[in-house]
Amino acid sequence: MLEQKVSIRRSSTRSRTAGGWLESRHSFSFARHQDPMNTHFGRLLVSNDDRIAAGTGFDTHGHRDMEIVTWVMSGSLVHQDSEGHSGIIYPGLAQRMSAGSGVLHSERNDGWRDGSIRHDRPHTEPVHLVQMWVVPDESGGDPGYDQREIDQAELTDDLVVVAGGKDLYPDRAATRIRNRSSALLASRLGPGRSIVLPDAPYVHLYVPLGSAELEGEGALVAGDAARMTASGGRRIAAGPGSAEVLVWEMHEGMTMLDVRGH
Image 1 (cartoon, rainbow, N blue to C red):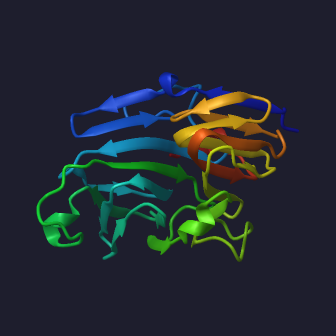
Image 2 (cartoon, rainbow, N blue to C red):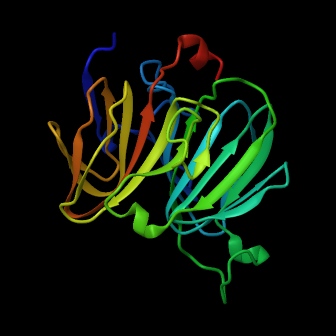
């Protein structure tokens, strides 16, 4: 039986990658930032808060056996992959890529260059996003891609299912991931507005924008996260300003074999 626990992870304690064009803060071990005591939570292996400068981005690189969900807060990101999929990811769009047996893709903040985004001249604004990786139930399979626009009104003061496995929210998920017992939910809360978080064995709460108050734990500011194990559905309320929240609801964890395999 899981021990009931809530662990608050402050933004200031997260590892950071800064490469001129990229400002990234990592919730878990990532790239050169390795910590054997901080490899994952539930089925969530990566949660990176990225700011990518205009005209730059991640050139073509590979992934396999991973469900990758990207959520944009501001700006836009151009996705292209070796399976012929392409798309523009912008605020309010649900996007996921299933890497399967292997896929190459690029993610760049340069849509004006190929006419994907209409601009009279190159823009200078960074794109701000959170990219999250969860481990699929089974390895291999064909790569896949999906994106769906979410009604902005639905995101306001309510939880919307951005990406869900087949056992969760069968009629509500904007996109599907190949992890039957996990789901990503998102909400934009107005000042003082609140929602109740899912009741699940593992719940990962991240606040990318604004500030919020988590029941029983106090204030969270932008970049803070809460890892909740068997803690029941708790209420979270926006602070004096608005808040955006991303919530992973997970009903299974990972073994060390899963972790070593990725």
